[in-house]
Image (cartoon, rainbow, N blue to C red; front, top):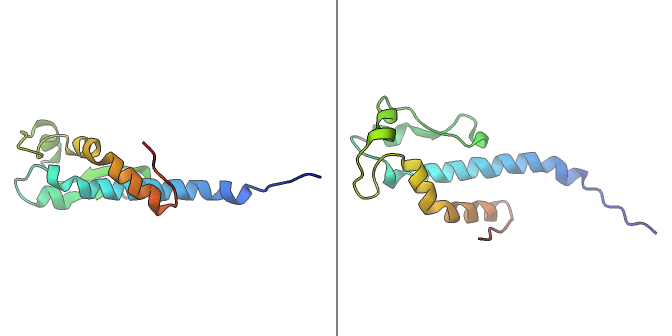
Length: 109
């Protein structure tokens, strides 16, 4: 007697689930970046968005001075340069655990 399991349905869903995971994590990270953004005005904060294809996992700020702020902003508390990296470092476990819960998984350190 043989037991045969057909995993084709599961394997077909894997790319869709990966896209959902990356898109959700990108959106959450974008929200977590707000306290880290250097503020001259709210334009930088409002210009941030997950890339037009969020499943690629890119965050983009399109304010005219965003590149200058990314490299040269002075640090004042949480606010300062390279805000997305610092936000990810501080919030990655929270983002990954909530994303894992949304897709029915479990995030283990």
